[in-house]
Image (cartoon, rainbow, N blue to C red; front, side, top):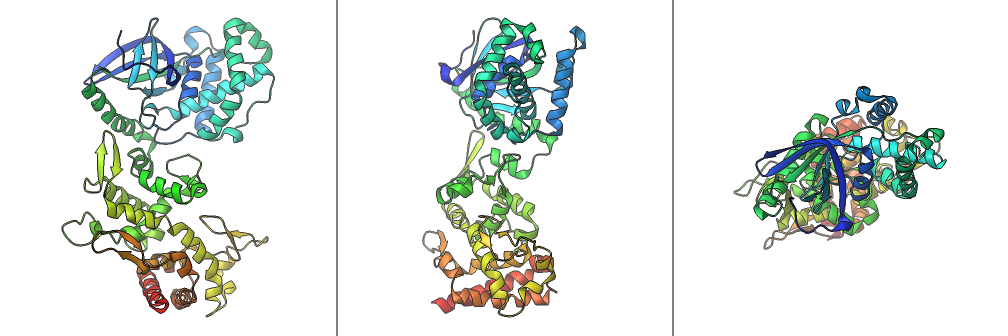
Length: 480
């Protein structure tokens, strides 16, 4: 019997495999087999999809999986084909114990890299199927797809219906024929499962090599799903410091940020990363000199090239001068980049504040409501919200008009010559509410008129950003 470290029963779950076989590849043992969906209950209890590069969502993919399950439930003998139709579930665990009857006790020590590496949609589809059958068995309404559209919502419903699931599993064991009366399935199908385990869980070197391989394995297995750069970066820990800073400063806002695919957040992380380049462009790593790693993205990229901004962010954070690699994760170590990200957490709210004052500022040089691009954004209810914090706004504002002004705030960003720390020269929130800044906005609005009132031309034009930064620079001098 091969054992890992002492199992913590409250953190472990047991599965049983059929027709399984083992392979050893270097420091990794791979076990391939088939598993009854009943054992998925324990896995769902213990795991989220933290180790999976993206969260799963109910939709066409999961519907097709459930249709295959239903066919297998009705089929007999050799006609059960679900294991051949599905690539199943890939599970990694650094703690495990081989039990009798081909059972494995699995312990997921680091949930960010261990657990379900691939097969999140299979897990969600089967879990939702189990909930539906449990509801039929209990005579209660079946949970709707809307109520559990993404994994986090599903786990919430799973917790609420957990007693029904237990009763359903007992009914399968004690009175499977009785389920027919309720129209519930018997979970009479098998799920392909692949376990990734350390070859020698008692060897620390083997464990370290095992853990350092997980991210690479996970990335490769999910390549066919065309993972976004951000999703991969999230798995590497490249957003962790930024996440923490947002969580500390704006906890409720932080909950709305989507750091990986299908995690339900309304704020896309790439938008925040693009804004962060307003500050990161001040760091020594994008300035000419011995420390230079890369060129900063063009100013207009924060508006029209967010993927390019994200690509450059990941390039910067992956550099050994900026972050340390611990196993399969990176941790930010550079104090200047850390200070830049801290300043960058102010930018979404500053964006919203500028958004709110912009129409009045424009009205000092023209009539804001007559701009065609503005008219196209208006609605009958006159109910407008700012893009990030969803504060009430009097008028809608095209993004192309705002991004250059936010970029202009570079003019009030300071670098300590002795420490390299990046900070604001003045309170940015008070500054954007000042008469001097409002005058700067009005001055910048001339660019809009010169660009035929076209937000695309304004947002993509290099001159817009230069004009905005110069206007903010003069406004700051006026407040001194």
